[in-house]
Image (tube, rainbow, N blue to C red; front, side, top):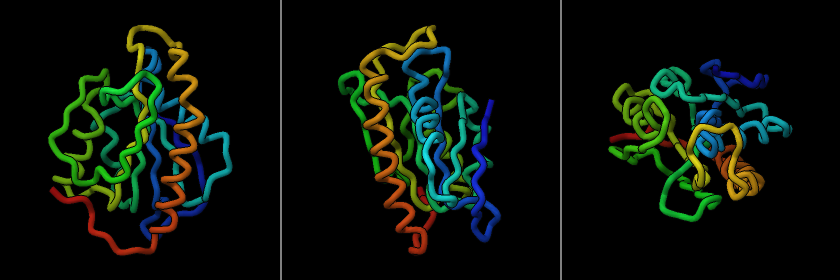
Length: 177
């Protein structure tokens, strides 16, 4: 299920210029951490130019949400070889191609970006804030290490948001292959 968090300020395209997209499966433990970070952000008062969306496991069906955005911030479990609970911030993944995950999602964030580039629907700037998962199995509970990392990930997202809000008026090319 996709939940849209309503904000009031939209760009000239009729869309808020910055999309924060949480990804994950609530039934697979730490895989859901992007959704938990998104929920923590939703409890804060954010700039009205920011839209928060729970993308769950919708995969490539999320493509229309990316169109006409200045920036995209992806929130997800990120298995990058660190310790469980390690927060990863990849500030510029707009041009990353061909990466494939092994998660439980129907297609992963990189596949979504690859298709968005192909269809010229990719936001100008794309960042990933992820937490290294520990336990990905059938459970609705996060591991302690991952749950403890959520406040740090929220802080990282707020830093990326500050940068993106400052960059809204800059000219940049949409992500290219």
